[in-house]
Length: 146
Image 1: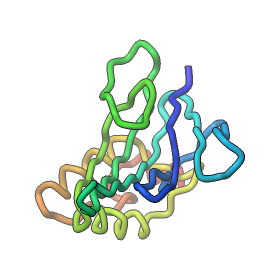
Image 2: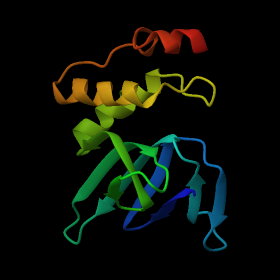
Image 3: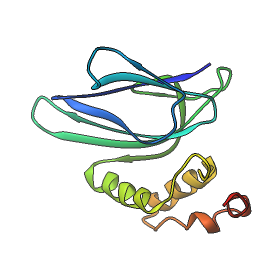
Image 4: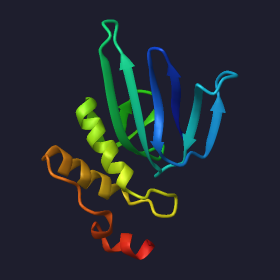
């Protein structure tokens, strides 16, 4: 069973992938601004979404998620069906920008993606206002995969 994610971009906000390797993409209309992507279980991806309220306030969110099997319990997350496990979550422009700067320093490819515990540890370090550790020092398995 796949986990589907609704991606869009319009005047009220946007919802896009920062990283992740979807298995498929389904276009909802003829434009490329509204579509769904699907992930196999145990995939890790990063979802960024921003919304503009009725008063003009911009709300920004960034979550790094791990998809689950159909029998595993998970979190209910906006735009993600049926749900996923939250590995890292940032709310607000200041925190989202800090995480985006950190993600830009990582080399995230399909062959060198760190495991989910690395992102959970990074989340804890961000909450403690500390810089995340280097992924090469995160686990011995990470060094073997490079």
